[in-house]
Image (cartoon, rainbow, N blue to C red; front, side, top):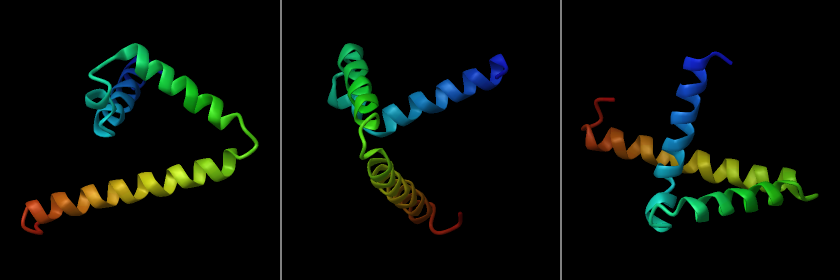
Length: 79
């Protein structure tokens, strides 16, 4: 991955951390955030990985759709 692409990718991932509310909920405690990410990684190493991923994907999809609808409504439906 080229440097610029990698930088953009990392910025987008950081944006998801902020968007999820984790930064505020942990009071920007990066050690706690890292611990939470390690816990997620352990969870994905279980035999229930596919079910967990499907659940998280559905939740994320709903959240993105809800956000898009809210933006559309806030813009008066012009988006």
